[in-house]
Length: 100
Image: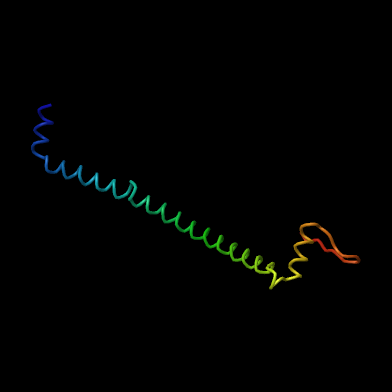
């Protein structure tokens, strides 16, 4: 026990600096604001940006479809297509090709 105390007294500056260095190194790499957390958050940000672009494209598509159904700009071909898809009907002597 005396050898440990005497070793600590001789090298306490080195040991304290070593513990401080290890503490800082561990917090830089790990933790809420560390390097590994930064990489995870950056990947999550990229995924969310792609998801946002996809949702914006869907929203623009829905806006276009809604604009086609408004009374002054009513698109009868689009309306006919919606009726056919919803009620699954066709005209007489109409050829229907199913593609898979």
